[in-house]
Image 1 (spheres, helix red, strand yellow):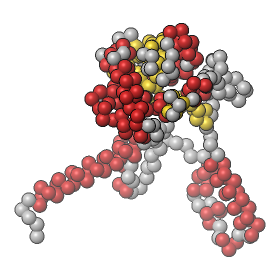
Image 2: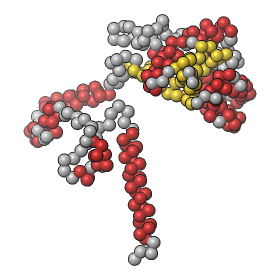
Image 3: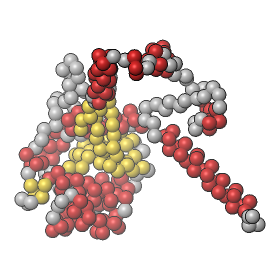
Image 4: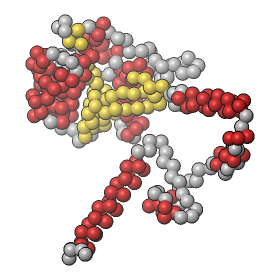
Length: 305
């Protein structure tokens, strides 16, 4: 027996199940990064979970399966061979072969390097991955402590995170600062200094330009092959990018306490990293980068490179 509205409930439940199936198909199909390979069944296609895509597969190229794989998959001698007919030497040989194959599969086929190191990555002939004058140097003041008890790398990460919050929701700065400091193992008594720097950034010309732009990207992760063989990938983060009528502006934050000529000299050290970001961004988006800036947040100085 069913209630009088059973039909309505059943329809709603079926609509939900259909929507959930569509959602799972969407998730499965959009997780592919380089290529999506879909199998089809000559018979009983209704049992194929990819069947909803069948109408779109008519124009998709069919993958040519190598003849060697066809032989194995068609139940050749390798599949039919009884374990009773395998000698000890054959078994040991197979174990060794399988072990070598597994070892080969575990071996990385590419290397990931940070953008700051990418400009000096040599290719297999010893040449630089891109035209450059050398690697970004590591400055002594970048690895020393601030005020004797704050790690520079952790401090920079915290300031970056707070500026990101300021760009997205300025009202959340005060309520977020303690959590950000704790996440980076920084003392809470540095809270006032962190807020001072971030508020200075919020009053800067760069911040105002970004807020008035047509589009803003914050802490954008980028990947790019450095050589044609794909053996080395560059990984970097663009701190801030915003779009103006003349093109995109890419900004890299630095917490170095420098200004004037010293800021210009230090910004030059980062110029190749910004050039690599800009080149990658233009290739990925097809849009022009019109300006690249190194922004020293402590001194509120933006230097074009």
